[in-house]
Image 1 (cartoon, rainbow, N blue to C red):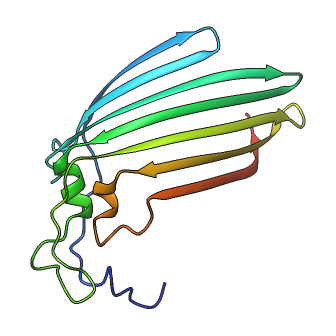
Image 2 (image 1 turned 90 degrees about the horizontal axis):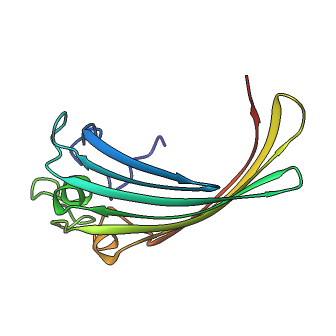
Length: 157
């Protein structure tokens, strides 16, 4: 936007979340489970870690691939504080000082894919995300529930 957003105006820049992670994946028939454990302080200023888990089940019906998925992510207080905390120098009338605490994210999703031709596929999906109260306590966050809808086409080489 061309206009300053009062809640975000004057915030220090945050680094991207580069780090080192270890993933364990398990495939059983049409199911996938994975768990990631990551430390984010290796290549950035973030002093924290996270654990991310996800489970997906594939249902094949006629020419449709339907994926049902659910997951949970746990963020350490260092990660939450770095991205959603407000230091004394960043505080203003719209944005009070805030120190983040550990938090979690829960998500559920359904995605469907159908071939249109040899190289093109139709894809649609919906996901629901729920952030714990520790996230929404930050003056930088404004939604505890987020719904995302995806509709599109995909080209396969």
